[in-house]
Length: 205
Image 1 (cartoon, rainbow, N blue to C red):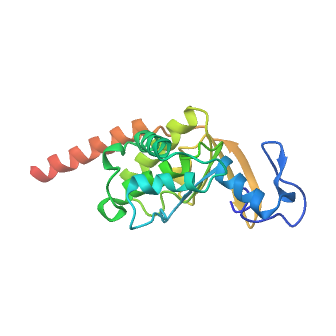
Image 2 (cartoon, rainbow, N blue to C red):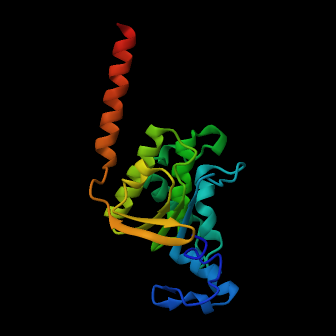
Image 3 (spheres, one colour):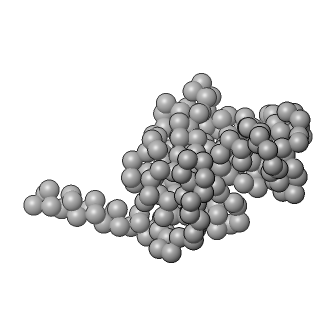
């Protein structure tokens, strides 16, 4: 993931990203690539605790090579929060949000500069099952709209939400195959809601 995200350089060979050999770029050029072409989502959210959800999403725009007006930053950040269903939580601080909401803010932040590729490193690792399905629903919608998403996960059930699985062992790809029985977030969420309702009914009886 560090190589794909232009954080590390390959020891040999070349890495073409959007037709550019990024392995030969200078540090500042790599920073621009990361800022403009790549979005990052981490297991630990990595939100700034003293800034609101809106301000966290605006942050990547402050470091871009093109100057963005305050009005445009706010509008774009609100649009990204709308995509992940959190526009009504824009003024909330991370401590006022659930883990799933914090992860959705992190996804919105990754979308702020309209990247071509979204890199997600164990994005559901700190989340419960229902919240994980919600997050995968966001990823599936983004992917259906044309965004490339590369996700690392050790959870086999989460991997089934993807279109394609690459199995890596000891740094080598040992399997590369399409997902034949791909899970759909909306369907799985309905199953979870039905299971919860059934459990509550059983408890009531």
